[in-house]
Image 1 (cartoon, rainbow, N blue to C red):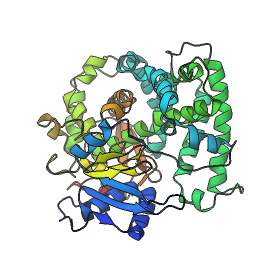
Image 2 (image 1 turned 120 degrees about the horizontal axis):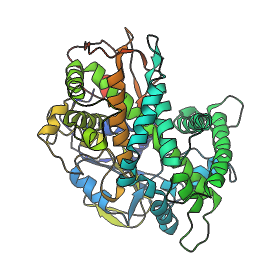
Image 3 (image 1 turned 90 degrees about the horizontal axis):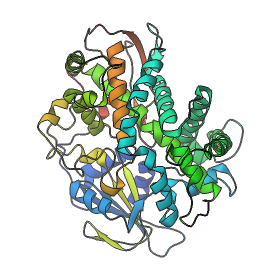
Image 4 (image 1 turned 60 degrees about the vertical axis):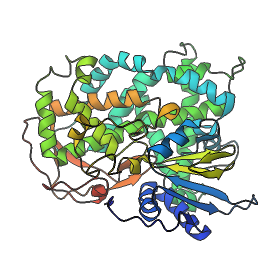
Length: 478
């Protein structure tokens, strides 16, 4: 577990090339642990140079933590832009190549502006709130099918739930069989990008991680091509698929198919990946903190059942809101964010040039004791007395870089938590080990075995082990 009180060695804020290479490799494998190690060793600012074969000047990497640095980077939208999420590539013409070079983080200028302008309309706050009743309906219907009194994988079930809701409401897809297929393909593609063996053995040999990821990408391209064609008859304001079907370059020329395909893959994965992990972590944190669970159940017992509550009523649940904020503080969807410099600029009193890199770490900012007392503790009540700025609390980034899906994600999390906890008490299997890994966001490593029983408000401590306690302070009851 991160010791935020550890004395920080600030002798040097700069690493040599060998140390820099080692840290870059580690940042790819596990950027959360990377950010903790860099901060503990160097403090809020660290830089290192990476030699490159194609450039005379080494590429500078700047790691920075803290609200002032966050503000400086996130406000500079002209010279600094988000870097890539996925790195797995393929030969020209392949689906892997199309995604790698044309998804949303890899498009800039007029093309990017047109995509953002059109595609983000279905994600506006007013549109999300208009989906509230339908969100409740789908969530209630799906969780009612969850099996009771036998072990299930909680993360798997929540991921299917998130895909069902997001694909229906954001993409206009109600065919459950297609949702399952698209969800599985998107899941396989994203996981393949975070499998080290995909990069160590990038060959299309049957059974290799690279080949499985290749197949997922190629099948996704076929599905998305049909999806876009079907959506062309709908209004671009209807949903994300229809928006992509009508998006153009600003001069009434359709965008290249590669840009549409790459953008669609990004939005498809982003629509469910973060909210499924967020909801799973929230449920586990509550189960491991029976006192907090009891307080939340008390609040939920004072309001109508989920079927009868409206958006205003759910938004008015202060303790539920505090729980959600605290979950997103401890395990933010965007734990680490990488940016690329496109033109010379000054950041943190350092001069950066085109192709240099910047790493922001909300994971670390959310653990600064000068902002959050007892920062490793799951303590929702803190939100009754604090009001951090958008650069001190940035689970979805901030300012112009704020994730457009943040309203949808937060609403889904609140509805899902209320509906699940109204209906079920969650029991962890004895001796359960809970570990985590990084795959674009922080996710459980492996299944999360639980049993569901009818909610009887029997709140009790449950004992588990695992690296989950790297992410937050172990409760005394466990």
